[in-house]
Amino acid sequence: MGVVIGWDIGGVHLKAVRAENGRIVKAAQYASPLRAGTEPLLQAFARARADMGRADRNVVTMTGELADTFASRREGVERLAAIAAGELDGVSVYAGPDGYVNAADAGRHSAGVASANWHACAALIARERQSGLFMDVGSTTTDVVPVAGGKVAARGYSDAERLAAGELVYTGLVRGFVMAAATRAPLRGVWTSLVNENFANMADVHRVLGTLPDGVDLMATADGRDKTVAASRARLARMVGCDAADHDDDTWTALAWWFAEAQVRSIVDAAALVLSNAAPAASPPIIAAGIGVGVVAEVARRLGCACIRFDEILDVAPGQGAAACHCAPAAALTALVS
Image 1 (cartoon, rainbow, N blue to C red):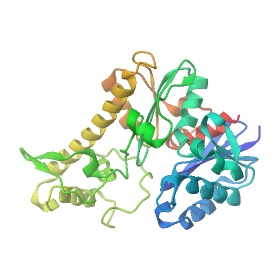
Image 2 (tube, rainbow, N blue to C red; image 1 turned 90 degrees about the horizontal axis):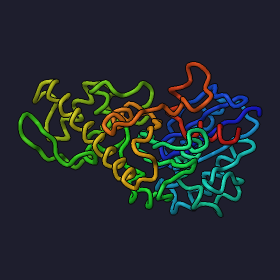
Image 3 (cartoon, helix red, strand yellow; image 1 turned 90 degrees about the vertical axis):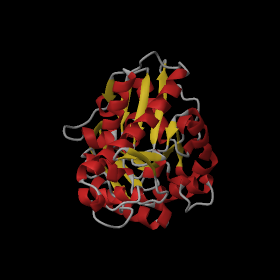
């Protein structure tokens, strides 16, 4: 079986998972914001190759084609596939139901390749568990994908279709804009509208609450200042037109809780919409992935469903489970070729 490395090229992160004879032995993510052009991705590949080593086969999925560096999603698919082929040996690109295609052919299969990383995870769950609800809370988005009867039961495939079906929710643990989570917030006994500026993100919310996992916030803060609890309080205060000194720390913790609650509710709503289509069994097990597995666990509790971590369906070396779960699509790719 040899060495397989799975790669997930996102809009702001490159994720890599190394599997040796089917067992995942290493997983990591690297900052690679494509909005700044493709140079950050090339730099991320250089760092990742040094960490991951060589492989007999490299398998690639992507969501980064949506970045506004590219004029169209097809152009993004073609350029990202070409970059991967230039940086790695033996590259195959995941095209969803069409399986793996050569990097040179990725453009012709762009409808299947574009933003297909969720499908890799769901396909693995369909093979290993037969049914369930896959939920991946990442830095920017959340996937909600039903699996039933050993098949991926999603109603949508493209981003547009998945948004309409509730299977793609634009909320994440790190990069989600706070003003996208709610339009108002309770502040010391009154409702206040939010300032529609990117003064803070969800990383600030989870940092204040102590629910932000170590090492997952790789992007600069909204104001370019520190990633400390105090600095996050100051950024959240600006969302309601205040300075942090205007109120005590408990006030800002309560505000952070409200934004986190709004995020959970948006995901519960999406899951309820997906489950209402009755493709999976009633109260299906939820398979949790991404850096926001804690959020998924809370969603599962509210829905009355069992919660299983994605790494539990993988063959993972000791100590690598959390990292593999954070990089679920790249991990799924290595399992699908084994």
